Length: 64
Image (cartoon, rainbow, N blue to C red):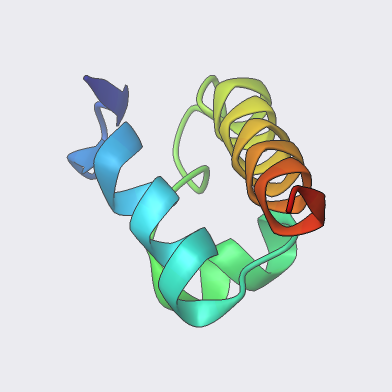
């Protein structure tokens, strides 16, 4: 799904940045992907995706 229509950034791209590059917030994400610099409507959705991935990853690491 497209998160940032202005720059063609998808949720998959954001999830990969979080899991593979350790991105933890919007500022870090903007250093790796161009988003949120035109209309800014994608920022909240991108932030939610980052938070969801971090929570999921943290929960899985603590199990077992």
